[in-house]
Length: 491
Image 1 (tube, rainbow, N blue to C red):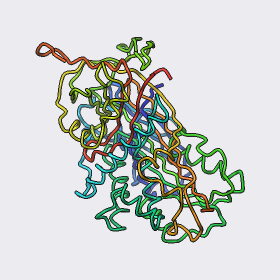
Image 2 (image 1 turned 45 degrees about the vertical axis):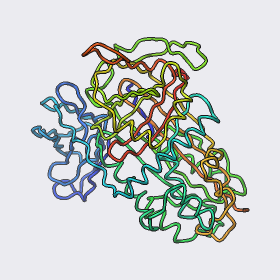
Image 3 (image 1 turned 180 degrees about the horizontal axis):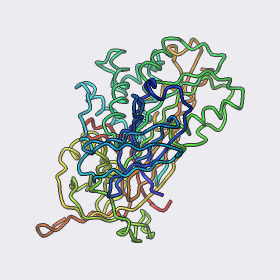
């Protein structure tokens, strides 16, 4: 079965759920599913499947699959950009696989610009700077093999900020760069960036979800709840935290929002805990069609770990045109996904430097220079397949990054109780292979109530055969969804 990168994270599925009219309105319905391909076998993403004689229909997802409820005597119309539509009678079938009559060539809609104001783009830079800072702290405390979502953490901190007051709000505002933003503009930033990221690439499934879980005995302020719903699209749920079933409710939400990749986010609920804020981020995409790795080129190769021991890993390989950058501190390549809105940047330190030196070097200024100075080059690329899951405690990294007051209290915009943050946790998953990437993250905040030289035309060798970094970003806005360090691809 094909695997893709999750996290950071199938297609943006648009279901047209209009009222059924006309011929089929009163009949018994059945569920019909199937896969749509062109004659070359390429799956068709975003192919319209309509119930003839009505306005009811769906579109195929990133795997070319569709599901639709239809009457027994229905006729389905399959149509795709540049294709003649096809009609098929359902009859007694529940599975209808369809092959369109033509082959797909360059039909994926190009990536659109993300609509952000100048101030919002500057906040992206601030958020990325904080991302590198916290990633450095996490890396120093945890060590090898880390996958971290700064975007998921930032969304959780954004929700927390609207409930903060006094010195806590002041400190968070300084770190989150709220200067120059009104309350509405700050909240609108999070709403805009979430909506834009989920809409710009129909070949990539990216899902962002927030939730506020509060103990049924706590009187949460209506303004906080309404802001969470309006700007963060948050599910707001009252639970009896003394009931063990509440743990299952929260964990089921996390599992559903990450397509089953993040489980058991909450082990138990402390009797002092009154609120849990959660953000879920899911990303799933295939490499751009021309940049996919051929599985027959993947072979066992050496990977030298930080302790200089050697592992044998499955190394993917291709030679292709890619954005490339190098200086005395690093070299990197950029691999595009889908319609090129999202990409993964793989970064290697020099042969005589460590991955920790590389992490120390990265900052917002350096990062912007790197991505702006990348040039198209022919690259001989080798990168290992890898898969990892991480549990990341973030209390100390947040304190070290300048957000420590949240653990002392001052959240009177949430409730009149003496509230403070007890724990900030993040769980992540990522899998990278020849087809693409699947990644996921959950961030939760628990709140308690107590207070090289080469000849011309020769491809540049870029061999990720030693510890490396990888970042998943949206290219136009610059938003970094994930940052990972891979010290041992086998783990």
